[in-house]
Picture 1: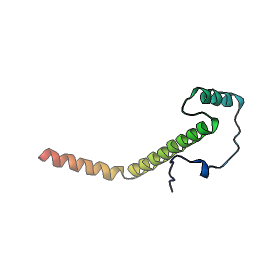
Picture 2: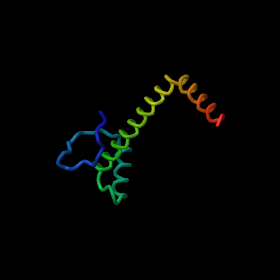
Picture 3: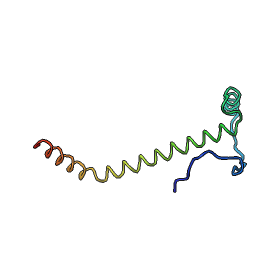
Picture 4: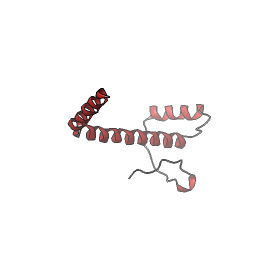
Length: 90
């Protein structure tokens, strides 16, 4: 079941440990220090994780839609031909 990606508030946040290589950590710190909207690492990591989850959900949904279309492509093609033929008669 898809969970909401609404903004999280401090009272329902959990502390976790994340291991990052030094280069990535330095880039994260640079971004945090140069961004007026996101002042700390945690905020940037939360945003990145949410965006990744949203992309994965969209990718999964797109894959499921492709499977449905692929499964029914002959029926859909037949229906499209019939519709075009009907419109051509009008």
